[in-house]
Image 1 (cartoon, helix red, strand yellow):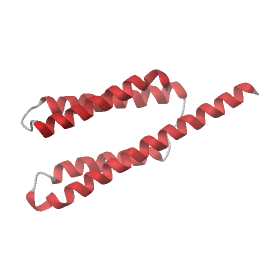
Image 2: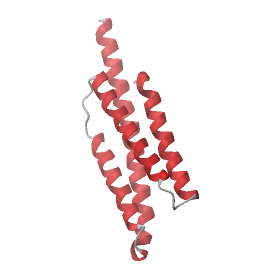
Image 3: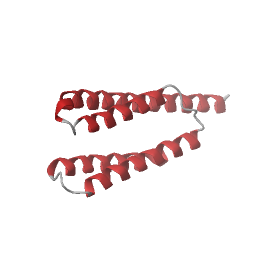
Image 4: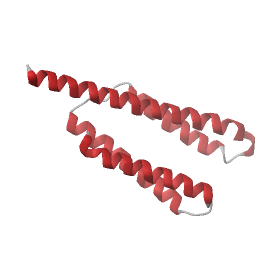
Length: 122
């Protein structure tokens, strides 16, 4: 996992930069490109980490999928004035689920690494 931390933080930086750029200048297309690139880099990090550590994803993947769905739903709800009140709760719920996924995924990787280290010591 340590090998791929650069990918994780690069993806996170790209996404945050894209969001800040979208807030400061809403008419630019560069923000969408930065957010998309950040998402792809984070997906690459996830795939490489899973392949290297040979950890099978579990129920925490449901948190990621539900979080992504809620964030996308929140983005779609912002487009209509009638549904604007539901956009922020949906987006915040999605972000909370995505943070939960990250925490559970890191916990799973650490437990796997500890078990692997323990098994090698025996």
